[in-house]
Image 1 (cartoon, rainbow, N blue to C red):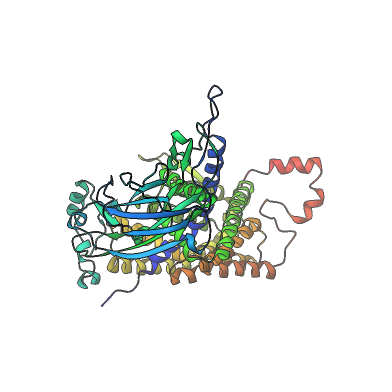
Image 2: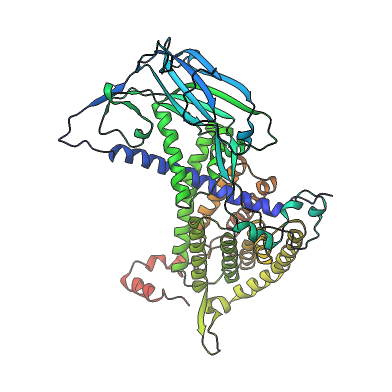
Amino acid sequence: MAPPAAGGAEVAAGGRQQQGVGKMLTGIIRVAVFWYFASKFFSPKRSPTEPSQQISNLFQRGEPLDMWLYLSEKENFIDFGGSPVWHETNIPYAVWNPKSTRTLSLKYHPSEALKRNGSLYAHVFFARSGYPPDPNYPEYEPYTAFGRTYSVVTYLPRSKADKKKSLLGDSEDSTDGENVSEVVGDAQVDNKEDRPVEWIAYWKPNMTINLVDDFTRYSANAVPPNIAPYLNIEPSQRSYYPTVFFNEFWLLRDKLIPINETVEELPLHLEVGPISMTKWQLFLQMDQSFQIHRTYGSMLEGEADELKRVFLEGNPYLLAVTMVVSVLHSVFDFLAFKNDIQFWNKNKSMEGLSAKSVIVNFICQLIVFLYLLDNETSWMILASSGIGCCIEFWKIGKAMHIELDSSGKIPMLRFRDRESYAKNKTKEYDDLAMKYLSYILFLLVACFSVYSLKYERHRSWYSWILSSLTSCVYMFGFIMMCPQLFINYKLKSVAHLPWRQMTYKFLNTIIDDLFAFVIKMPTLHRLSVFRDDIIFLIYVYQRWVYPVDKKRVNEFGFAGEDDHASSSPDAIEQKEDEKKTN
């Protein structure tokens, strides 16, 4: 019998995917634009002593071309006597019409050498119509043909051995025989890690050949650096051949086909057509941006394909809305963070605020940080989570007294409630809410941990504890806002809450609801994003039910009836003296 679906893991993965796509979109576009303008402004400058030599395209717009495509296991091609795999005639150069794009689909039967980690190259040649590409042919004329070589086979490292295993050793998933080979011992995994990296040959099923629509006159000594590697210059003619670009931008890794001895035939879809200069440069800048993000650790392997998949499978109008909403999400996130810091920095009273929720929030943030650290996440995400932990701990210092106890052998931190929190009903209501809430949380955490231990695989017991706690934080983290709702209900007031910060968070929650329909994610997570809406709607309802009491002290320690006297010099000086937190 198959085990139930791992809902907690899906929720955690969906949450990380939802939060990362918006930031990834804006970051990649920002780097691409920066790189484009940098290449324009910082391209090599021509020396004043050197004469200005302009190079131009050897071919004219609309000039008919013939094309030959050969497949060979040799990188240097000289065998023009064989028959080409694909031959097309009268292809108009840099003209957009039905005749300028040609396609062909075929089946290729690999040789035994190719099956044993061999190589295969596509040699593409273009020539003016009526002229052959073979230099040994009697009718061949110089400067009429050009070509380029492309590797149809790529080599990628084999995925690392799965360190996860069933900690119980007799889970139901192992009896089904689905993943028996992946359940290995620690010693076997360690031995595999000591071996050299194994490279696997993959077949590229799609080959897109683009002729770049480029008739720019370049200075011979000042070709832009992003174009120079692709420019085929003929020095004797002070010209360059049309640029042949093998477009792999939309070739995703999951479309690649592994080559082994059991493969008898491989599909190959060929396409030739024009591409504009702007589109070509955009593809180059996007690939460069992906590489920069991977170098600096802000993008993991495979995330670029996921982003491309969004563009391939998503509605363009919906994508445009998503990008705008992503920018708004970042703005609201920053404003919520700024107002949260301002609120706790200026707060002088804990009356009406849940101190225990602050502690629990720090524990949840620490759990997520340890989980990311255990799963080898990029350093940028780790730094962001680590800063969040520090801020949550700083908020504990604003909500409680933190003292260093050196009386014992090991110095320890002691936490003591502030007077404004302990001497009123807030502490009583907070303790009562956390008491009943802890029963629910402990039950949920225990049940999910047992489920995870029985049906899921983990690297170690430490990883099992972290993954179980992290999944519970993702699924049940919204419950941490419930004690504050209970305190508001008992005090019949919401004047003590940081409403500006909560407003920005509520706007971000609405944006998350939009992402739930835009981004591909598990159904369980798609439903879970609406849980925060319910909590915030209850907050809004409480704000409407409980009118503002101007005699009550607000979050900054001031009463509404004292506003008329706040402008006097004595009042200002008194307020400055009272900013010390009780």
